[in-house]
Structures are given as structure tokens and as C-alpha cells.
Image (cartoon, rainbow, N blue to C red; front, side, top):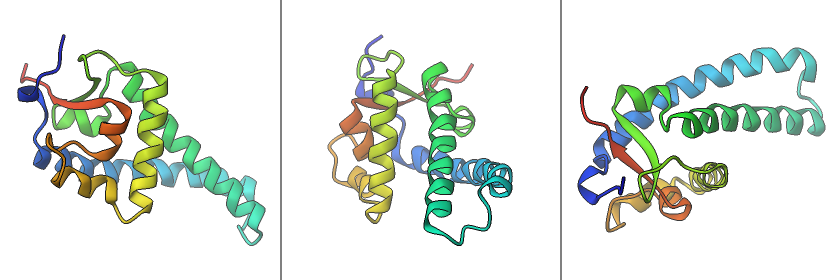
Length: 142
């Protein structure tokens, strides 16, 4: 399957899915924090904060990578009928999942530049998708 430009998910749909995803991610982070804080402690020392932050990053990567690599859809992406694929329409690779997550995280940390990129990109792709060689396509109704 070759992903065509006509199958790309519209920007407004991707942004709506991202808002919904942020609610799910907040819940995942809450549960991960609830599990980790008794072990890490009160976060008064730098090593405790760094360990806690590393734990949260690992959990969030695990959440996204599991869904992306298995079926290309997180829960929010299923709701909004979006699937993550490579440029040929196939499942993404673990390397692409790592790269997409890292670039998205960096882009958010830099004032959302990865998201703003979509407004100037010729295909309205997010920067992390452009760099990772991934596409968010629209899934037809069943």
C-alpha cells in the first residue's frame, strides 16, 4: 500500500486527536507517578527528580511505541480514525518510533516548533513526521 496525499489525515483532525491524546497521556503519567513516587521519594534531591523524569519518559515512550508499532494507532488515534504509517503505508519501524518520539518531544520543548511546522510544510506534516519518514493517514469508516 502506498500512502497517497489524498489519504493524509487533515490537520484539524490531527490536532483534535492530539488534544484528546493529551488527556490520555495525563492519565498515564498520573498512574506512572502514583506507582513511582513511593519508590523515588519526595523529589527534593536532583537525582530523585532525574530518576522520576526518566521514569515518566520511559513510560510515555512505552505507551506510544506499543500502540504505534502494533497497529499504528493509539486510543485517541482510533477514535479520530487516524493511523501512523511509513511513507509506503506499512507499519513503522522501532527506529522510526524512537525518532518520532524524540523529535516530537524536542519540538514541544522548543515552543511547539514541531507542531507549528505543519502550517508551513507543503503537506501540512508535523516536523517529527517529516523527519521520521512517517505519515498520519485517515482510516476509512468501517
